[in-house]
Length: 312
Image 1: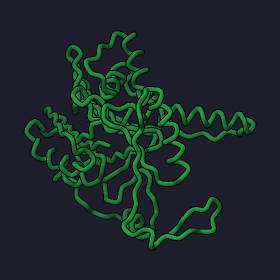
Image 2 (image 1 turned 180 degrees about the vertical axis):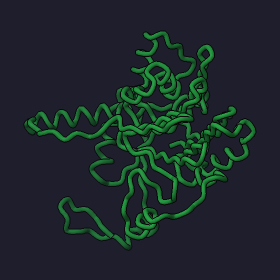
Image 3 (image 1 turned 60 degrees about the vertical axis):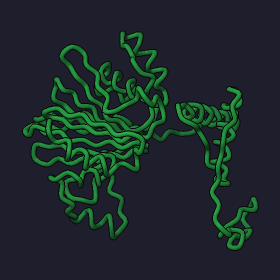
Image 4 (image 1 turned 90 degrees about the vertical axis):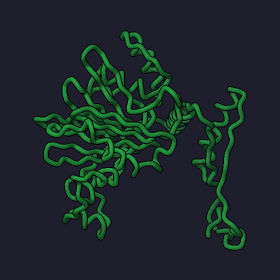
């Protein structure tokens, strides 16, 4: 988990606004305790709080790529699980990589495919790319919305961040509740695409947005489609197994130690079993941990549920 935030303004010079940017990024330090980074230009100011998983040295952000007179700046939260395959494909298209990070692959994917890069990603992500030559901001959120992303348009400015509190640290964003925000608080109505505070919007899952001086364009690039299920039980079980194996294998890629949490349920036990098999193939041992409570044996008792589960 990392934290991203930034500020675009087509009228105000942001080159000397690092103090404001640092205030915004500071609100996200729990998301990214390992490192912080900043990049500023006359129209864009990007910040990143990092939790290191892949390529500790090469994955520093915000990340820049310059090609001729074009400069692209990226701040990104998430993981692209198919980044190795994408890197090889991009190499066949004459892209040269200087790091081993998925961050650089994401940035080059945008350079190659533009806004359609989101159609090539298998992963969880929220990111923002500033295109200096075109004076354009592009933001995107993963298919199911695992990674959060909020934004606000105030006058000539666009402010965005992983959490609302990053936006509220900006001097032009006020924490004003409107009718919809009150409903969200007191009636527990989830407002997808809207925030609790006035002018703050949530970028919806499977959506991306492009901002220029002249216009704002938000579009849906993916949606879940329901179709009739025609496979038999055996085929269905094998297909689900193959998906789980592939998912677990891809998510074990890391340059830091990997562990799993055993909660006692079938899901964590199954994931741990699949992960342990992958570790075993590499002659490694998967470490696990579980959470217990002081004197828990005094307050828990067996239940009559099937399987002998325990409850408080």
